Length: 109
Image (cartoon, rainbow, N blue to C red; front, side, top):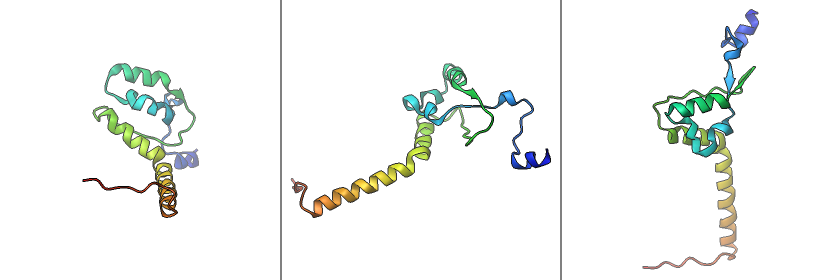
């Protein structure tokens, strides 16, 4: 038992209290469930499920605007993928430009 507590210091007296919501569920509709309104809190609770363990724990403040929470979670979840896609697209466009396969940009005054 001591070894289990050492591995998982967050042991609940009542295991039915451990609930989770998938990150994708939180990000639906631009994170509207993370808004301040009580109705959204009840909907968020209703969308949660009992859990045995958590992959990650994300805490938040109800006073923080929903859009900032949405932005932070989106970057956390998709940041590396978005950076890699941007890099790949930039390299492709650059190669096409160097090869002369893209129309020339004309400066207008």
